[in-house]
Amino acid sequence: MSEMEPDVRAVQAAEGLPAQAGPPERRLGESLHFALRNPKLLIGGGVVGALLLTGLVAPLFVQEGPNVYVGPQAQAPSAQYWLGTTNFGQDVFAQFVFGLRSTFLVGLVGGGIAAVVGMVVGFTAGYRGGLVDEVLNMITNVVLVLPALVVLIIAAAYLQARGIALQGLFIGLTSWPWVARAVRAQTLSLATRDFVDLARLSGRRAHSIVFREIAPNMSSYLFMTFILLFGGAILIAAGLDFIGLGPTEGVSLGLMMHNAVTWGALQLGMWWWFVPPGLGITAIVGSLYIMNVGLDEVFNPKLREL
Amino acid sequence: MRRYLARKILIYALTFFVAVSINWLIPRLMPGDPIRTMLSRGASGDEASMERMRAYYEQTFGLDEPAWQQYLNFWTSLARGDLGISVWLFPQPVTEILLSAVPYTLALLLPATLLSWVAGNRFGAFAARSKWLDNTLLPLGYVLTATPYMWLGILLAWGLGIVAGWFPTAGPYGFGSIPGWNWPFISDLVSHWFLPFASLFLVAFGGWAIGMRNMIIYELEAEYSTYLEALGAPRRLVRRYAFRNAVLPQLTGLAVQLGTIVAGALLTEIVFAYPGLGNLILEALNNRDFFLLQGAFLFIVVGVLIANFIVDVIYVVVDPRTRTQMQGSAA
Image (cartoon, each protein chain N blue to C red):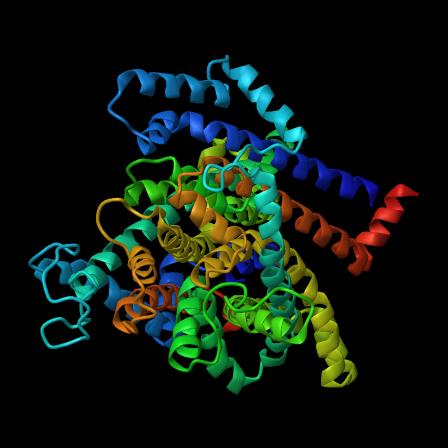
């Protein structure tokens, strides 16, 4: 699925990576030029931005907490309760906006940690080579084969108190392997280029070569990787929450679905309880993916349709 | 060939070792005391009986022995196929409970994975570079892969099951049916199977279609495609070559995605109360049955490893390049 695309593509793209095309300001200006004319990027970014803004701002206007029993029970959406109420009289809209907040948080923490771990492992393995590469590659392959969600279930089951940041940390620590593989493949191909040899001859340190010479040449790719990880972390978190291993305090979109199914919202026809949280997740992750296609077109001249 | 497969087997053996170690380590590393958690289930005010229960549990879990001894014991009992006794369905052995759930999970997982892979590849190759399909249906594909498995399941169960009433929404078969090889029972079984299968299929389908579409575009840009076109080869022929090349990364993708698809199947089972491993995990969590939970974990890991190995073998069979390379190095 879409998570594997960059992995496969990385190897191919690595062969045709541009070795610094033009001065950086001009490249940036050019990217911006195409970015502002790319409908996929604009629509995707717009949806994600709107939902992020909702998650940041709307909770400020919710008077009571998301789990407080505020109204009548099991009410359909109305002017007072925009998304109706749950079986217990909680405001679904309040839960939804607070849930958006935790969804973005878990994506940021999980995606961020996975990106950092994946890049560190990938750069080290690709640049150092030899025994280090062998060992790191072995570790990567092992973690890659282990089904992440099931490992997370086992880990989360033993925790008495679970927070969103901790969930993000765990997700980050299990979902980095494909990034490491892709980054390693690109690093391997870049490390033999002339400009890297030159930097090495001039006596620069390894980490400075990696960060100043190699990483900038794949910066667009790294950014897109982070976006995919962000979306992936959100989906994994939603799965964990749905099984009932969500945050013990607070609310999340996955937890809303868990509660809706547990308390028979399906049988009672209370669609306003289970449609918004899933729609929110789908909209965020789907827009991120579409945004990524747009970014790909912006950064990769071959894909531009003009 | 032998070296390639031997290396893969080494990785899988290592993964299995890591998985078993994780399984052993996690309960011991986590904050909190699993025995106290268990005791709180049957908590009574009587200090003396609590103390006796504590001693009993420590002894059955072997927690009174040194750590390395516990670790060895864990492996020995595993080698005997002993995953402990379930707390939830006492006194059934965990292995037995899991084995009875595996067929249901496989019945969902195998057809959904294989069919979505084949159909997604076909469709993605078809949609690539045709402007109209690309711009209308591919966003749909992205939305499908972005859909949480359980949410699509919930929507289907509600829309087609409860509102339209076309399909039953819970269980493997109706309460009134008697299991047997007769037509009414089989159709009942299929009608219960269909919705979870469909939701699993749809989410996976979107992902494969997009992956294939992107691969085909890359292949059509490759030099051999341009060369073929320059020679005046018909469009269909070029596409066929592109497809054959693009299928290989998709096969690797299948191996990489197995974990995600299995997770999706577990979540889908929970929505439809389908009695596979996912439902067992839920019951294990609700009943704090850690033996069952950890047994399910090992079962799933072993299943994913076996599936990965099968994909590896298929890859060797399908890709002539790896085969000749390997024969060359062996000769």
